[in-house]
Length: 145
Image (cartoon, rainbow, N blue to C red; front, side):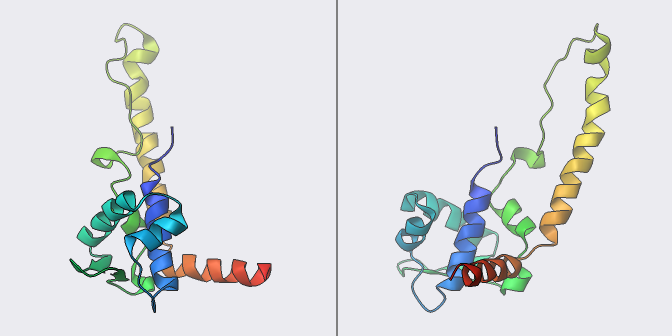
């Protein structure tokens, strides 16, 4: 089981909007790069708009970044696209057997560890911006050409 791909697609969309800033970043255009259908892209665009990361105008094709690249972190994208339900990256199974030594203690043992892991992930994502992603893509492209 993996984290929803909406997160990676959200990063892809924001990066592509920057690369195409002089063009029209319609859902069809974005879907072509992501290699998915435009309906999925529109759903994610709606989430990014609601979070204040992009601007979309009804009846006018295309999306624009609502903030500068350096002001959009991967944590912003992560939160915008609802990667995890109820802000819980890790879920713990319900109702372990209270008569078992492990069942009785497992939740109290692993929940603090899992919470610390989620905080660490969020800290890393908060320290990386879309600008960092775009710069890395440019560097990789320059090495391959």
